[in-house]
Image 1: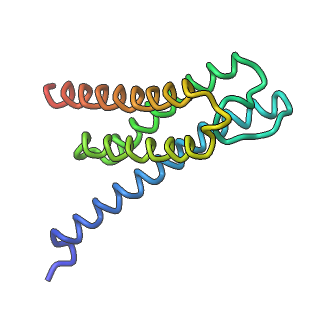
Image 2: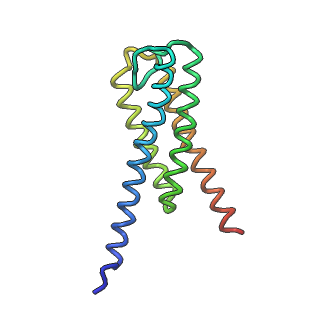
Image 3: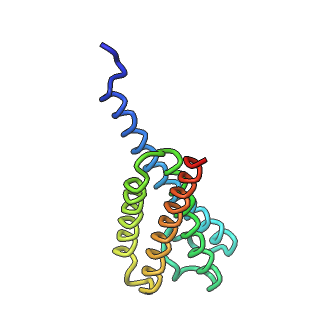
Length: 146
């Protein structure tokens, strides 16, 4: 009896997917939190993990929103590159994880933050994830056609 039968290999692939998605989720938090820490240290202000009402200037709102888009795109590309199978399913799964985080954020800060911020952040997350998915699938099509 071989230890590397089909069920064992499928469990390894499942664990790889779970680890990649979890690591991507925490990498997304780290990148966004790091940008917020840099802003707060620069202005010597209190740290808040989400929202924009506490930012010291309006220009930092655009920095945070740009970071949301770039982080979503970058982490999704990394996840899809690591897993490299069932790209649509994994993209949707990661998107669901991010949307659930944003729902948690909304439930904790809907009284302090403007509604346009929540709409914009969710849109930018979805846009970053979609752009990463499209780029990754086009890149794979070019690679397989070559």
